[in-house]
Image (cartoon, rainbow, N blue to C red; front, side):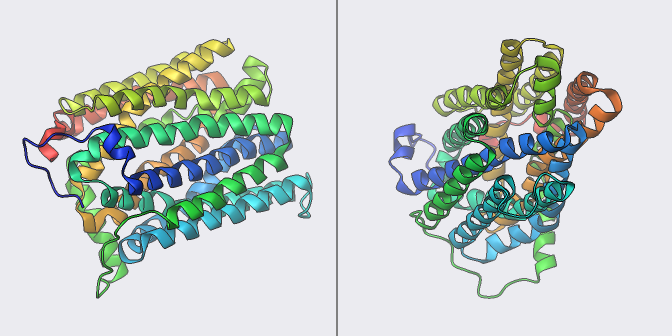
Length: 422
């Protein structure tokens, strides 16, 4: 379903995408899974900080998720390329449902964890299982994306997809903060569990023709090696992934929001929902713009400028002492990140052969998805060593350094025009 259109064929508009039931079903799955995941992320951060009052403990949440994610990501990509994709997506959503119910049990006291250190360990264990589950979500999504759209729709589809994802990043944290403030942690976890159950139904009912399963499966490590070889010999793919990974690794301001709100801004959990949502508001605005006006020319240069803007926004956030200024800086960071997300996902879809999509997506997840959790851990360590505000300024400066290094070491990415990949 990804054949190229004739050169003089009109580019399908947003209306064509929204009339595609396979595409809308996929977007529904993505939104529901994102809402569940983000409500848990906000709630578990506040939960752990209430128990520990330690910014380093917030960083450990990221570490607890990223280690199992790393261990399973490549195998998840192999599974997506060799097994029914919708069934794998449903299984992953049901796994997310199970971990969320476990967290609700801890928060309500149904599970014998209480507020002791054992309770904190139980939370970390549930998040570790979440890491395994999340290893399957993105490869399933990326593989189905290429099946429900034609190749000439990828650029605009990536813009719409970014809007959907970032809408989840707006609504999820805002809902999580409000649920924690007004209904308590247990209510927040149970709402997240309901979204996970709905996501499992949405993915299994997507209208899409999946590729035939291979008659013979290549040895698993040889197959994974094929995906790794593709990524590391394709400079535009490797450069885009590395740029995003290291910028998010050092620009992980969101992980420290509970501490920043409590110690610097002196607000409660309702402000946490607002500031967690602010980057996604910016990304939604940018995603809407890019869906209407897809980027083609000078894509590599624009990508580098956007990531540099992300670093500058993090520095501005660190220096802020007012809630509205902090929200504005995070919204600007989200606008810059929105450009990066759309361009990176478009590059990945256009450059990757269909039979490698699961494996390449899982490798992308190691670069990109895990950088959020590693960034959370790095931010927690840096806050412990340097202090809260200096660690954020350091992260923004390191992001600017990453942009300079990428521009130097990946000239093909710097000069990239998306029309060259069609």
